[in-house]
Length: 164
Image (cartoon, rainbow, N blue to C red; front, side):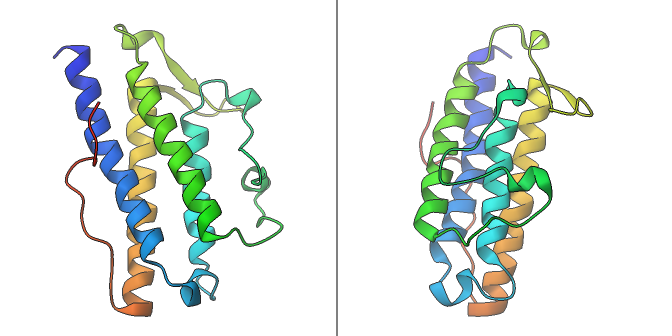
């Protein structure tokens, strides 16, 4: 398989995972956003790590404002982020993911992702798959909350809404 085809497949499925997360967030009514199930926090947590896992220079990673590094400190953020803030962050990460995949080199063996504490060391394809699974995991959690709270959930996406 040539690298161009691999990039297209990776984006098609990773983009669809991000789109499903976006659909769940958009469907969430304000009354559910910050109830006891913390929909907003589950969405934020997922997006924070989506961003982090798309950063090759993890030692210098910082999320964009207004977000903080509370996820690394195993604590809740100082405040509840709004749906608009979380969706803006997700759109930022969607663009970052697409750019990341487009920028993959011909020789994928040369690119590794290593976390700040050096406990995780993945080939670039493996971190992309790991990241996509993490996004799907949380999209499913958010859809479960929506089913429980409003008896509705976001639709399945077969492929990203756009192509490389």
